[in-house]
Length: 455
Image (cartoon, rainbow, N blue to C red; front, side, top):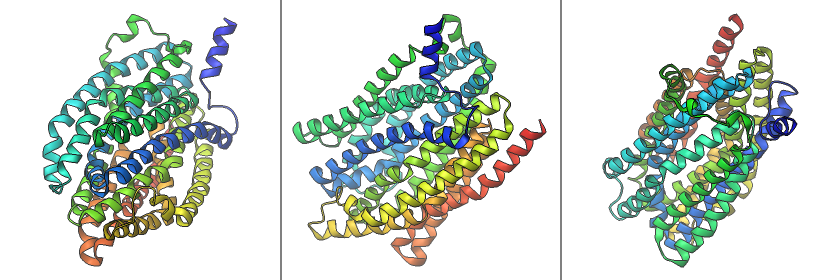
């Protein structure tokens, strides 16, 4: 019994006691490191493709980026939604209902992964045509998507495992899994693209194999957590429970879908600006993940923190956690923004060979866009913290509404600003999307907290 308790202590963490700022920081740091490694292999993919295969291959990755993000966003929306209920059950100390929630989440995720794979493979060509993808990069983009979409069940499995572990307060195992996946991915990138000459297919295959290894790592660690020792009856489908999980997951998946569709509309506008502009925009978008790394980590921490404290009935701690989360998010965003303004051009040089006129033009476009994003980064960090707290409190509808605000601001800016100020107007579409979401989320947080206090 003593050994069982130690195992539980080592692999889960209760966020309902102790300093909120300290808890959020300690929980976020492993997530941040994991996200950095995840972005590392995204950057390596981009650097190898840009340097070895050239500007056209880099542009092709950019042309399909939002479609890839659409499938990933739907998967993450469902799995993160499922994890909200798991975190609440953990905070309330309800072990058997927690197991039922985990098992039914697995069943729903299997269906979700297979359906999205089939839908992605079937719709890829139609969507690229709709986006007006230039003919000379179209086959490169399709080749990349075919391999990525075939591996979506693996992506679903990793996201579900990571979300379950985070909901139980374990942010270290997803970190170690991502470190292993990143190192494998980088090694296979070099082998498949530079060694075997497989092109963008090799880059996509390396990503999927790395994720598969991270799934196995998470599963091995999950065996050590007593709360996750399942019985056959836990996997019996429960209509009411599945309905509750879907009520949490569907709005988040839909929110990510709406944001992605907005991104694809932006991409369709960019596709008319030429290969150099597409390549420069793609290079900065690949760094976007790095800029957002800490924000995403604080968001994951806030979901778990808010969910566990709501389950434990500690409402006052939720407000304390929100204030602490915003403080560390704003300080972090200012630091990252300053770093990118100082060294961004050097980092972008890893992706773009500035030898010819096209490369020089792409690098200038990329740094212009990166500078604008870096200055406005605090807006994005507020978005992540507030949205994630609201989701952790069990309300995924209001964050979905903020996704619509993002959509209208992003697409409106993308369609209108280039007509008014030229091609550079497209750079402000993302910033205005963040601002639109914040205008919905900040008052929504106070509304949700008011209702919780009245309960």
